[in-house]
Amino acid sequence: MRCMANESRRSQMLRGVLDLCLLAVLDEGPAYGYEMTRRLRDRGLGSVGEGSIYPLLGRLEREGLVDTYRAASNGGPPRKYYRPSSTGRLALALGVSEWRAARDEINAVLAPVKIEVAS
Amino acid sequence: MSDFVEQCRAEWKRLGVPEPVADEMAGDLATDIREAEADGISVGELLGSSASDPRAFAAAWATERGVVGMRRGQPSSRRGRLALVAFTGVTAIMLIIALLLLVTGEPKVALMTVRAARLGGTNALFAPPPGRVQASAAAPIEWILLFLALAGLAFSGWLWRSRWGRSQPPIAPA
Image (cartoon, rainbow over all chains, first blue to last red; front, top):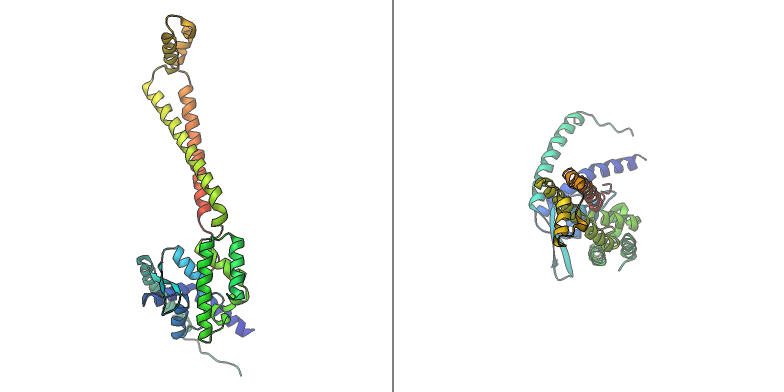
């Protein structure tokens, strides 16, 4: 039960910043869907919680935060590549700034808490 | 194509996602799943809990992309837009005519009638009675036209607003 609650909290937290994570990995270079999952995984974000990146990519595309184009992947079939638009880069910069401010504020509250796990 | 992708396709078809868009999404998803499986990653790991509900996943993706209902809505939407453009044009012309009539300030109805009578020669068959000529300066035809034009424009403005609101894609919960 506690594990499920933790997973839900993690999912909720991720939901608020997953778009920033996608824009961040795309800022390193254009990528297709699975390639983004791989980049997130390489940074330790193996599971993106309850959702998946595809609907989120759809939203980023609709909001003009990413540009798309089709190109052949390494010898494979043509893939849809995503890269941040200028608006997307601005949104990333603003979002990261907001994230850092929120993280510091929450840390100021939670950091002093001593964690004691009953055995 | 995997069963998961097939179920997504069925949902996109049900939702009226245009076929080329559905083809693109299905193709990308199928290729990603194959590549993930080659890396030893299951559909469940790739898509999280969405893997257990392909229809919900497909609906969320299409909704977020703003492609739901595009196929079914297109023809009627185009006809509706044409009708609305025509209606707006007619009301705008009515407004211009009403304003021109008001600006000139002449008893237009009577003048038009008099001209028709003159064209017909001296026979004053269509000549307005004197009382009509005097009253025509205050004839409400310009004002009626102006009122109708303004009402029509307001109505078409409301229609444009409601169409614009409908054309915005729904926002799915994150």
